[in-house]
Amino acid sequence: MNRGSNSLHKTNSLKRIVFKEKYAIISDFDGTLAENNVTDLVLEHFAVNDDWKNYESLWVQGKISFEECIRKQYSLIRGVTKDKILSFVKNHSKIRNGFDELLKNCSSKKIEVVIVSGGLDFYIKYLIELNGFDLNFIKIVCPKAYFTTNGIQVKLPRKLLYAYSNFKEALVAKYKQKNYYVIYVGDGLSDYYPALRANHVFVIKDSVLKEKLSKCKFSNNFEEISDFYPINKFLKQKLGV
Image (cartoon, rainbow, N blue to C red; front, side, top):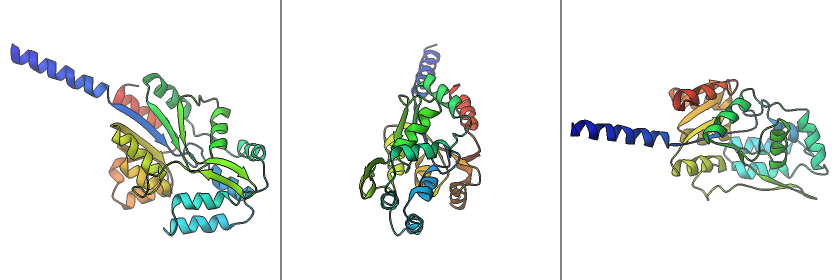
């Protein structure tokens, strides 16, 4: 009888531990939450020349860091107002289907939702609010823009020196260190190392990230998606959300 009671007590304790596990959904923005790459469109339209593509190439080749790349790219946006950029992105962006439902589910269960991006703070926040989402519930980690005569200058999220490939990976590592179960959602090259650190990964169908993860024999640990509904399904199966 005592053995049975102890067994029941241990089972209940395990259930409580599982229930208290902390979850965070960390999602890229360009090409992931937003169906198109808003930042590339902004650079294509407003940069004074095409050097931003050269910086992109240098980063892909590993010759400069992700952070150095975006610093140099944004410095090429000159002589344009914030309002003009916001007007442009309003007409050239669409939030991926299923995010509204996911946000409601996460809010009800107090699951953290984080957007991490190399895109600029002011247009990411603008597009989130434009689509009726509550910025009080969504944490945004991205470069903060300052308009100067030398182009847009940025304050970047901390990368924690050289311990990580970029600030996205550093963010995932930070949550993991705090014992969060991290669900990562992404599509691009800058999402590769963050994805490797996450507990579960959703990748945009036919994306660069999907190709990279497949080549590193990571194929059993990610799911391809075209919208956010499969993430809702995953949470329901795992947590009953």
